[in-house]
Image 1: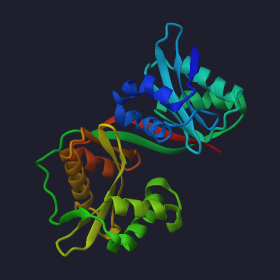
Image 2: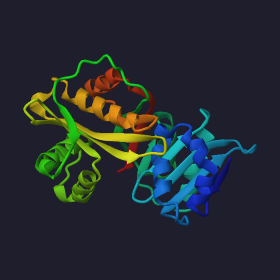
Image 3: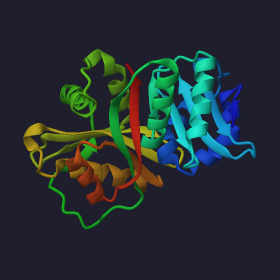
Amino acid sequence: MKIKIYDTVQGFLNENEELLLEKESVTQLILHNAFVNKEKETNKEVIFGRIEDEEDNIKLIFANVKPYNLLIYNLDNDTLDSVKSLANYLIKDKIALKGINANKKICNEFTEYFEYKTGCTFKEYLAMDIMEITELNKELVLPKGNFRVATLEDKDILIDWNIKFAKEALDEEISYEEFKDKLDERIKNKSIYIFEDEKHRPMAMIAATRQLVNGVSVSLVYSSEETRGKGYGLAIVYNLSKDYLSRGNKFCSLFVDKKNPISNGVYKKIGYKILEDNYDYRIV
């Protein structure tokens, strides 16, 4: 196996962007990190590369950008030798590693080998499915209400819901200060939304969190605890998906918790389909 490390992020994009865009929902984290850093030269904190076999066939594409996890996308199911080559490179060059995001097979192979070589320990942090919608189920029955852009007047409830979302979806305790700037930006950019009932009471929120080349990534789907089971989560995801598809996006994508079959069932009703699993492992 041969490992290719790029000197510049733009050089990485020049050779790999078209390939990554073929499965953009699956590779969006690698692409996003590359686009954000495309003016930079690479170093030990900003690494982009790929693994090739002796015939120059691409086996893995990866990115390791501090402070995020190592991201791996495999183009071949026979991955063990490629994974070992990547792990050996990271160990040899003493590249700091926080964790790994990849499908279950890659995560298992990488963590087992990396633990064997270094003595460190990985722990599963999140188990997710990557879902995508290209066409809406137009036969859904939705609750009555209004889908609208969130405003500054919604800020108090958005703060409360963001904190609860982090706890329920990510098992993280966060404070307002940790997401204050991002929330302010989303309100300003009109990328966070509310679904309200007929009495104009906010029932659910959602955000378009990442504009991609051909689509949009959706997150922060949350409905108030006392109104769950009444279809407001369904309504807000449906309306945002409809809105962004009508703008010319080819798809909307979601990372969803495998441990929440109720939410996953809601997304499937709307027309979302699972493309691949995505696991997040962190070094303990």
